[in-house]
Length: 474
Image 1 (spheres, rainbow, N blue to C red):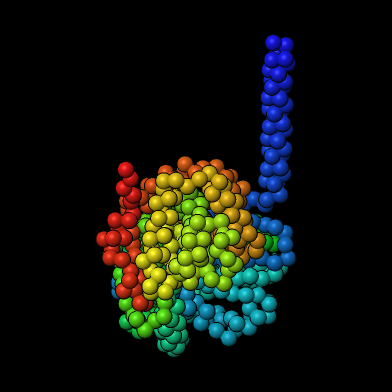
Image 2: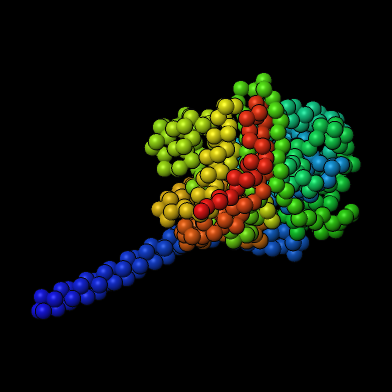
């Protein structure tokens, strides 16, 4: 009896010691978290009277990236002017009312800076990477480009040919082709079905009037974010934006552009071409928009699917179930998961490149993994995926350009910048049950969108693919 009492006391003391150890660990973690917060420069945001938002993250470094993010892309176009946003981006560097194209190029070269731009389905971006002391000059040049583009007939004709050649390059990239087809079939009859470059007929017919109309009706102050990262003083950038972008207002000459809901449709498109050696296939379901609370959980689920190609080491060493199946069974040459987000919708799925005779087996394994994520994914797998997603997210924010892009995009999508510590905390709070619940909501028994290009005769019929989006269990 005495020995039993001693044992119970020892167990009680052990419990107390463990509790004390947990308290110490918790306090240590909180201290480290607080210290990390102190070392992260805040994202400062100021809204000008015109509606332009100015946001910065000042590291005090010798270099900086500054840019102008505009809430305008191919999603705001229609069948008649599809391609005009991308065309406008090209024309921005062809001279302004103050500078010719050569003068613009010389000024940028004299600064040793980089000037670039891109157009997506929802945004148009102009940005410059430069020395911190040259930020005022970079902002002045970017402002001139956005407000005073010349849009001369000669420049338009020359750029028309450049864009048509760019379209040929895109058409030779089968991954780009598959994703354009995937959007066209998943969002058929809506603006998200449009390609960013637009159809050839539109590129050949877009005029200076079309460009000017688009510029006047979309490049508005309330739709613009001026972002800076690196060696950028917030107050100075606010003053620069206020003085340099004074021409921008919120007076619309035409119909006010609005973000129309884009209806998702489960369907398929097959472009069979037996002259190609490999099949390129994407299978997706409707995902969540940027501001949806399920977005991060879907990102974890996408990380669980992973990516693989034959250039990697043996698939047996890969922690991802689909990668091991793909490599060991020689099911594909490569695959990658994706989670493409827009403001109110998204596409979540897998893209793979496979030999024609392996298509059916690869589709089977992909869909088996879809069902496993929705029903039986384990806590250990989710912990590994969360660690990988957190590391990838933070590693992508190690340059001024990446941080500047993150600030600009998030302000347009969320209305605020999500600091990295908040993002990592949200990821860390996701459990296996969360993943199963969200995957069940978005994947289980949902109609997929399928786009396939190449020798795709062995791709199962759509009704079979749809029937494999759920499990019948006894």
